[in-house]
Length: 306
Image (cartoon, rainbow, N blue to C red; front, side):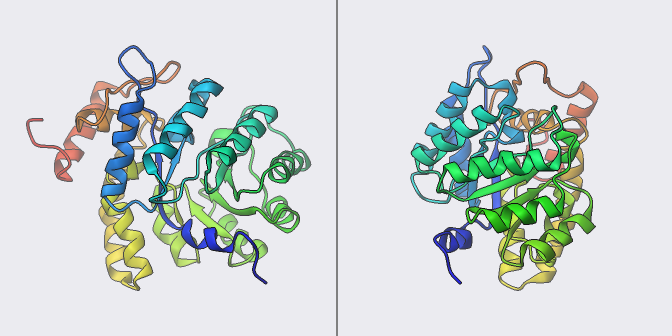
């Protein structure tokens, strides 16, 4: 049976880059740089753009800034690829407001994180997501990242939401429990959109029927991340596997400190942004920055003496 979300579900696939939020040296959002980063993504084959997910430092932004970041992204993308901003929050009303705003702005979907810090039980999580889903018509992709939220959205809860909310169409699983992510498709259906938020699981999730990935590494090396998905879709398993292993060292170094600190350091070295985070986040140690620089040189992303 088809429904109104089937067409967009076919487009919400591949490499969805969670674009970082660039700041100026005075810590104001740099919307011009944000547009440049999005253009960099589109020029390198990225299939979909997201903003204000974990990589976008949403908890360091005001609600007004989050809306402006979404507005600027919509304007820059101009319909060239789907747009799926992060609209979740630990505050229910804020998440509701941002998700409605995403729909008003013409977003193709919204990425809504499991509330962090307050650790709601499974029934409370069900109510939170169902209330938001019922309030909008756009597709909702639930974002499960237990390492950040201190609460795992159980498969049974997700399956219940999928059953009761036609517009809950997928999940980003930043979950190292690969048994869990297999059971997501078993219980939610093979057409449920499953995205990897764990870099080393981006390729393995494709093998079990995943729809793509939402990988912070794509901020730095969008072309190879997109190519891995393209190769898989074209049936070139060997090429997809080769790119998976090729990206592994870069993935590792970009997660030796809390995301997006290493990514912002890397983009700063590449001349893409001012490497600025808002407190309480900050740049990695000088030792790690040296390792990031060496890795970028090895990947051909940075000249030896840059």
